[in-house]
Amino acid sequence: MNGLEKLGKEFYDNFVTTMSKVTEDNINRVINLILNSPKVFVLGIGHSGMFGKILSMKLRHVEIEAYTVFDEINPPFKKDDLFIAISQSGNTSTIITLVEKAKKLKGKIVGITSNEESLLVKLSDAYIKIEKIDSNLDFNILGTLGDKNNQNLLGSLFGFNIYILFYFIVILIANKRGETAEEINNRHATLQ
Image 1 (cartoon, rainbow, N blue to C red):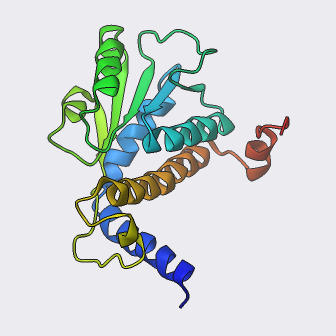
Image 2 (cartoon, helix red, strand yellow):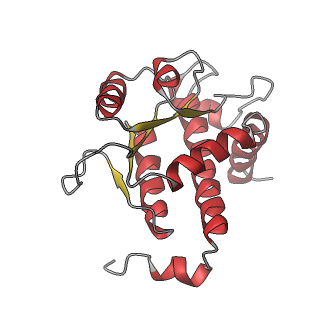
């Protein structure tokens, strides 16, 4: 096995163990909130923000009116809209401030975090907890980014997990709505 294959195996092995703890009930609650909201706004900061943009884009491919927070062309957030907040710590100050604002505007909140004791979870109508790391695994390749307490390693693993999770959520939404691959493909951007 070459180095690239070993790296992929480290990501995959961590994914299998940590995501086995995510319940279908939590995923279904999130999907129901997405499907029953007039608009969906997604926010993550840094690494999580990149994956948040992917979620927003993919939701639009299944005809969910989705936006990424801080995009200048966003419509206003209104009552019953959904705010999906992605924060590994669940306590990122910018995210918490905007979650509180969305609550005041009578919106719903979904938290995606590794910290079940976080303020984000307390403010959320539904949340998905993603374990940071399978502490029984050795990260020989990824370990170059740091040890099991290092944010570079933990952020990489969290990012990989939410990337796959977001695709799974979009696939489940597409299935619930009876979307075909051709319909989804026809909504893909063409000015690229």
